[in-house]
Image (tube, rainbow, N blue to C red):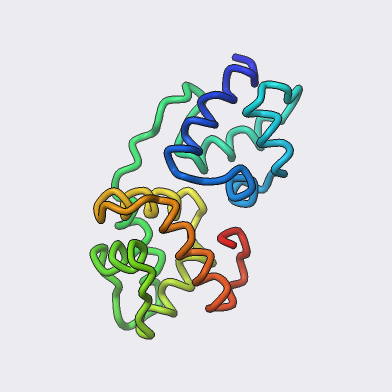
Length: 159
């Protein structure tokens, strides 16, 4: 399999998640130019580790088939609830992600989620919340960017 064969599937999956090339670049630790060249079929080499990480962020594997990405909200709440007295439920997290409304009691767990969870876990939670609540994923990404700025998060990939 060549990179030029992978590019169209990366583009399709990025579009399904309603991510820009710049957003995907941040999430995967690559440059926007690299994403652009991969999607356009002109990238000559990426390296196995970088390619596997990119595919993992998108929920793909080397077969370019979507991995089963169920329970994204569950996995996200597990990370968010570490060492907090009040546990965030999957429904509360889905509502917050979909609406962008973050109550003060959810700020600490959501901060922990966005700073500490593996990026593929958050991507999966965004996708699941958008689907469950009937909102476009792009809207959820905007909420994450807003929270990242307002909560002064350490991890800047959401902006």
